[in-house]
Image (cartoon, rainbow, N blue to C red; front, side, top):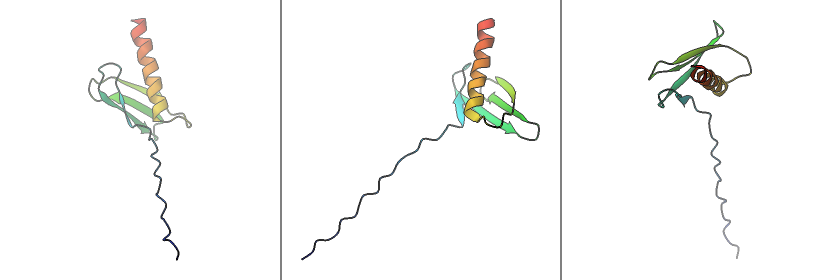
Length: 82
């Protein structure tokens, strides 16, 4: 007599996604959003809590995380020079 064939368990691989909302270096809340305006060729990085914002020109190969890191660099330059 033959045995019943066992079913293999499905292995689910969870892939991490790049976040869309980031932490503000000024106030500490998770409220920084990156908005692309492709018509004007600008990217707006703005904190909805404290109102800190910077505008960058669109570079085709950069994503939201890259603009957030530029936002952090500009903030650190501003704080260290003051």
